[in-house]
Length: 311
Image (cartoon, rainbow, N blue to C red; front, side):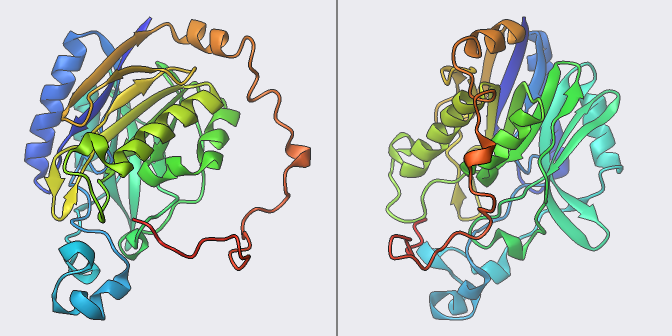
């Protein structure tokens, strides 16, 4: 049996405050027997203060300093500190992890480039790295995109990582499963809807989508799924929290709901995977020979394609 934990918590620009919060979370997780803890996207240094296309800053309300729904213009976005993967902050995170495996998000510096990155660490150092591939709502104005999905071995099993919008694309999680991932940690800074948002986050359509993606990705790939998310508000964004652990059959084993907290679940990983894959062979029964050879550029000019951006 292993105990795993998915975190919903708020993290901002102050790294000392973030490390203090992380230390407390990991101390509690260790006391509860956890071996794997998933912290949110941008846990070190915070996420962007607003989302929206860079064009928002050029015309309309954004020219006066606000974007859609009164958000700050994209050009005025506050950027998180850019950190080196071999720098003191990641080493500090690894020391805090100690005997745990911990995943966390940060803004990675690679020369002059910035990436929205997830790292997995233990007391032994960096175990794995993932750069966010799919970029929503103008995020590409602040980060370069990653270009691969790969699983890696850890003391708790073979692990894959995704970041936020990555989970909206079935191919991303499937690539990790094909690479042997037994566990997927998806780290998010997933906000509520910007338009027609619900006063109660539990009723928000983006909360519903967040939860639906978590369950679908776990079920279709028959993996243990940890979903961590930012909580509270940051800049113009209000996050849906909803950290959870989802079993390989798509069942929610533990969740924080739409509040900050930590979702803990204890599982027999080998037994769970064997049971899920005993009668439904989602990976074995794939038929790649029948799938379109190139789905890179769908025909968005077809009359059935939607040209309405809903956010």
